[in-house]
Length: 318
Image (cartoon, rainbow, N blue to C red; front, side, top):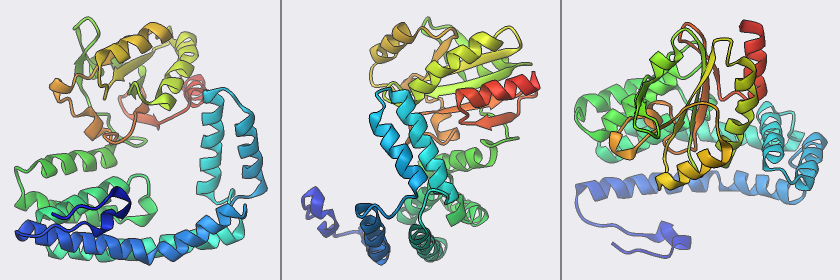
């Protein structure tokens, strides 16, 4: 292995062995994909630099955000900006054209990559497939999920007992189910006192908000704090919260947050040694957390709702 500084990581060289040869081919493909989109990315960066990327409504929001001191209020502004960007309302006409070109190129490159993954089944390409499955959730417009499922079946057949198969099965389960009308993933975890609680039993016959958070996820904790007022308003009307603290480095970090915020509901502890697989099934292995509202029938009603979204839903449906 020849390893260069992080800023020059693309110069790294790994030689020897069949898997390393496959990995070198994978890196070449990744480098080609990165290079192909560089001109478009540079053009988009130039728009940002010259303040020509966002429409005035987004510019006004960003100015407002800089004046705010509350982290929660800043998060709300960024959520508004994200929605405006996703809808296209927050982008100038030139920015829209460049983003469309970028999406078109990405679709082409993804299709080319999937052709290789489908025709050359090996463990290196399995990592690429898993990456595409994960990326299909935030960018569904770029990926053909049915094709991903079809290719994954071939890999699962060849690598039956491999951890990648277990993980990709869980990712695809989450994509199929963690949406409006889908089924939640059930789990049994202990609270801080060691008493076991099962999600399905806690939520039985109630509207229940599943709130999975990590101590390092500021937006998650902010949302949990916001939910307290909703809980107090509807707790006597068949509404409950099932919270889970996960992905913590030290349990003392969890205790500190619970002591500070004093949540009025029970918080369960996703101990690493339990291998609960909740992060894998809920598609948040690489993110801070998720909130999911389920209805009285056990079906998912809302995914990642704000506190106000939950309040308005309960007002209509309770």
